Image: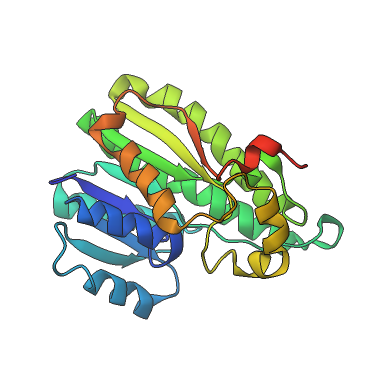
Length: 249
């Protein structure tokens, strides 16, 4: 990844931070966005002083088109190109459907799906001009299997999968690949409540018998960003320890 310019949304912690770390270690110059955790983001960016690649953090609410456009413009003005976009920013607002508020439904869709749409639209223009680029959308196994109390989250991630395939077909002629990574249960702050409540039951359904680490997802994202993945597009790659093999059993 030496010499490549990457942009990771929601990169201050969890899976996003692991992706930032992996790309920087492989030599890329990495920009990542954060929404509210400024101190955490700045601390993460400063921790890469001795890595192979440079790391910078930029504030952005992915629900706001103006902020999204500003981030992409800032990166491309500084670097004159954008090689990799990783759409990782996402939220959960779990709750049973019949009691779910309109606000919780809309906020999840607008962040998890709308954010992917806005960043792809802003970044794809630059990549099409370059005739090269990699777009990687972080999805979830819930987008395929569904999840109790996760109608909003499942809908957003299922839509990301469909969007990924459609965009891949449109951008392929310009040498821009578009793929998604679909994790199962990962040891992150976002999944902490679910793991605390149902961790043992979930592990029983995972053939490998354990949860993923953020670095497991980052490794797949880094591969898709590399030249080794030049002939892969429109794919949703599952990283779930085999959970999807057993469905809802």
